[in-house]
Image (cartoon, rainbow, N blue to C red; front, side, top):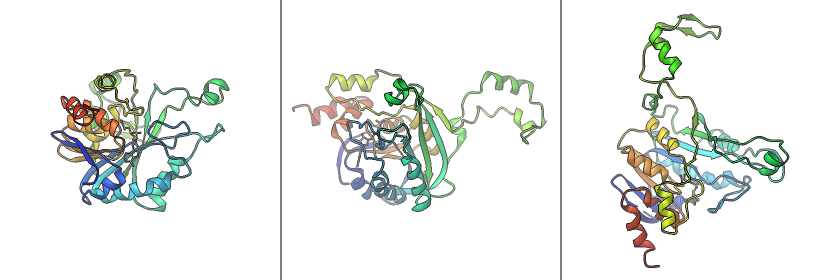
Length: 304
Ligand SMILES: C[S@@+](CC[C@H](N)C(=O)[O-])C[C@H]1O[C@@H](n2cnc3c(N)ncnc32)[C@H](O)[C@@H]1O
């Protein structure tokens, strides 16, 4: 494979590479889930660089074609893609909607299996000019997550992501529903009173990154490595990996950053491949895996 294999674990491999090169070396129809958060078209650039909204689709298309090729017919491509503001005016860019339409309609590479919204209550009130100074916009606290698929019927099972019943539901299950037709037109039958082991989640995922420190951050600080500035909250990859794959299936993140996806896949006993172009982030990510971090750090940076 092109690119450098920086470390391996029981279930996965972390590469430092440009993923457009590395993806080309992966077998067609071999991956169950591509789960990723690429650089967004942000006005305020992150340290790893961002593509502008105007060029976004042209930049993304070659990656999308490779992702489609390597996915199994029953596989899924989950794309976390945050919105952005237009330069200097209080209006929103449409780049992430354009991306969706072009991927699914114009280039017909994927189906939209379902759209998800990641609500992060801890998001900062930005851009300051519109939100905190002029007070003419509110906090943007939602990322869209496009669940795309190669076929119309990607493998999925919501029974793997059931949520605990709320108190009110537990009472209903005990006492039973009033059966019959609701004003909405829904017919409530006796089946509604059956305990299914939990409630079916919705397509809004609430997950806040409120941790100011964890083992990964502590280790990066101790070894003088940059902490990745746009990490996933564990709950996001955990939800999609459980929902869309089974143990031993293969999950790939082509824009892996600090490799939250790989670490959750490892925990859930899925095989994984991660690809990140900045070596320092790949080395830092090794600290997510027990005992790996120091070895990887010493191998690549120990004597420098
Ligand atoms: C939004 S961050 C991903 C963060 C990641 N989800 C995490 O939890 O840490 C996007 C990452 O894509 C990386 N990247 C950008 N272009 C790339 C490319 N062509 N190949 C591989 N990685 C790339 C950037 O360096 C950045 O770390």
